[in-house]
Figure 1 (cartoon, helix red, strand yellow):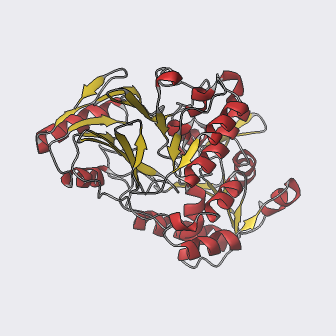
Figure 2: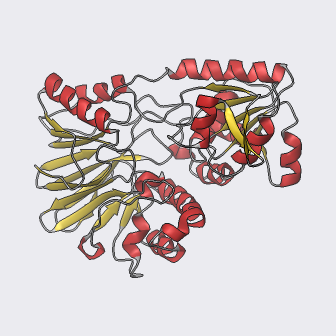
Length: 421
């Protein structure tokens, strides 16, 4: 077996890995790196691909898959869970609306991808070609998210995708019963940092919510539409938060998709209550009124780069009694990062000081450093290890530490690197 790294090499974004099993080629993820102009992974010829696996719906893993279907042919089976495909369609449609000018594919290619989808269940092997199998395991990162094992002639490759072994209010922990492996491709996003413990983040967010509402203010929580918005709603409901919770934007469509797949949720009843009892905003008339009410508003975009979050931020920022809780990753150069670091935001075309109280709480769906090493502690065999999906230092240092601690042949690959097992 050979694996070629097509993306996510010393960077977070455009994840893509090509597994060659003799004459069978399996592509694991094919994502984009979203900047002003999207950046794509290395090119592969669709006619040479026998299957593509989508680990989860986030665009840095799913966003470039429609480019494999430009010919209109649905010959390449796309493998993943049903919620992964439904959420991927939601996010890719939105990307086409926003960035379509920069994309080499259109809506019709996304539809061809969806026609090609094969819905897999966790732990059930799927045969590709004559002699390769793909098996998905629960990843704990997003609803329907998976890790992947590709097996061929007794050799096994394990790809973590994005993984969370802690679980959350929304999701069960990742399933680490993946057996003996010969190659591991592991994310390195937080390999050099331990994040705020989830219990602390939840406690801090709840205290902040009570503070803001007790002073008759409104708390705005900009959140990623898939997983983070629903996680925050579940945190509030699980802790019996008694005040009004409002949800808006694309998170509402994600709510509907997740609600159709309760078997993928940790506690379907908490989810049902959290989402069902929240107020769903359906128009501008209500939107303009709710920002003046004591309540919690959850809405995309998580980094304040678009969506209804722009309106809410502008309104909430104008009063000291209000609050903004940042619970999503804030990329460099984004309005969310600027608000967090400088306490300023764009209001009516001018940069103005944010009067609302702004606080940050870590609700990442990725494992921290300690938990990444706990995964490695459980590895059976003597695998080669590729550290990916992190900045250069995170990937490089993580590989060095793995080599030192476990004696595994570990490396932080460059794009284009080929590893054989």
